[in-house]
Image (cartoon, rainbow, N blue to C red; front, side, top):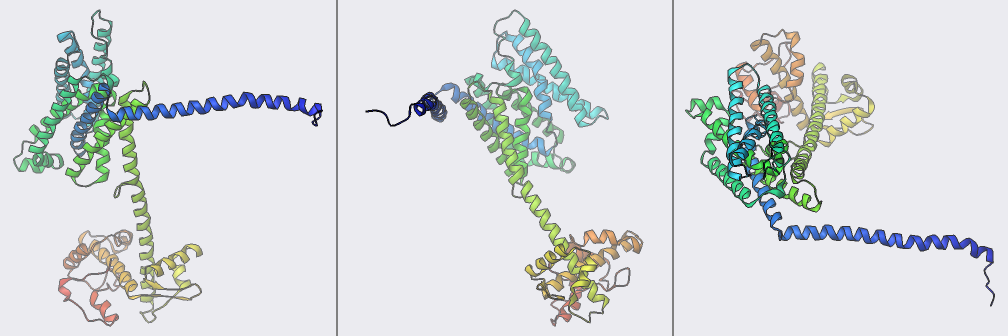
Length: 495
C-alpha cells in the first residue's frame, strides 16, 4: 500500500528525527549525572552523621573543642578590647613550632606544644613591654609583634623544609590548618586545654569579670589585675596553640573574635555572652567540618571560619536588640515619634499665642508652622489620629487634641523650657543660645531627670524668655481634675 505522506515531507522530517534520537540519550545522561551527584551528597551526609570514619570523629571532636575554647576566651578578649591579641600570638608561635621540631626532630605533639607556648608567651610579653614602656598605641604594638615573629617563623619553616631531615613534612599545616590531620593525641591536648580554661573561668569568674570591665575599680578592691591579665593571656596562648593545626595561624584570630562578637550582639549579660560564644564556636566547628566533608579536598579551616562568619551575619541582621533590622525599625519609629511630638508642641504654641482661647487649631496654620508638604502633613495628621493624640478627618478645617495628646504636648514643652532654664542657670548660656540644644533634648529627657531639674531649679514657673512652664496642677485644672500629689513631690507626665 503506497504511503499517504509525500516523499519530500519524509525527507524534511529525517534531520529532526535524528536530532531527537541524539538528544534523548544526552538528556537521560544529564539526568543520571544529577541523580548521581545528589545521591553521592546524600550518602556523604549520612556517612558523616553516622561518624563511622575515625578521621571524621577526630576532626569533629577537635573542631568542637576548638570552638568552645576559642569562644570562651574570645569573650574576654572582646570586652577587654584585645581582639587582635589572639592574631598576634598566633603569628608569634610559629618560631616556637620550628624550635619544637628541632628539639625532637619529629612532629611530637608535646614538643611542638611546649615550643609554641613558649614562643606565644614571649610574644605576649613583648606586646605588653612595648605597650607599657613606650607611647605607642595598642594596635601599633600588635602590628610589630605580629609581623616580626611571623617573619621569623616563615624563615624557620622555609629553612626546615629545605633541610635534609625526615618527618618535617606537614608542618605547613600550622599556617593554613588541616583538621583532617589531627591525631587523637592532638584532640586529647585540646580537651585538656579546654577543660583547664573552663575550670579557671568558673573558679575566678567574678574576679575576671570585674578586671575585664573596670580594672581601676578592681585595683581599689585589692584584686591582682595584672596577674589576672597575664593568666588570661596564658590561657589564650594555650587556645591559640591547640587551634593552629585545625584552622591555621592565618585564621585562628577569626575563631577567637567571630563567635564572641556574634554573642556580643545577642545579649547584654556577660555570662550569657560566654555561653552563646561557646555554643556558636562549637556550632561553627561542627558545621565547617560537615561542609568540608561534603566537598572533597576542600580545607576545613576556612569552612569553619565561613560558618562562624555566617552566624555573625545573621546576628548582625536579625539580633533582637542590636541587629540591623531592629535598629533600623527603632530609628524609624523614633523619627516618627519626634515628628509627632514636634507637631503636638506646635499645636501648644499656636494655642498659647491665642491665649488658650480656642481648643481647635486651624489646619492651614499648623501646616504653615511645620513647613511640611501636603502629603507629609496629611500622613502626620493620620498618625496623630491613629495614636489617639488628636481628632481629625479629611476635609476638617481644625485639629483638636485629645486629653492624652494635650498632656503629651505639655510634657514636650515642659522638657524644652526646663532645659533652656537649666542651661542659662547651670551652664551660663545666653538665653538666645539655648533653643537648639533644647530642641534635641526635649525628646529624650526621662521623668527622673525632669524631677531632678525641677528640684534644682526650685520648681520654676517660667523659662528664660518669660513663657509659662506647664505643671501638673495646671494641666489637671484645665482638664477638670484635682491634683493627685503635692507639688513638692514632683509629677509624672506621659511618655
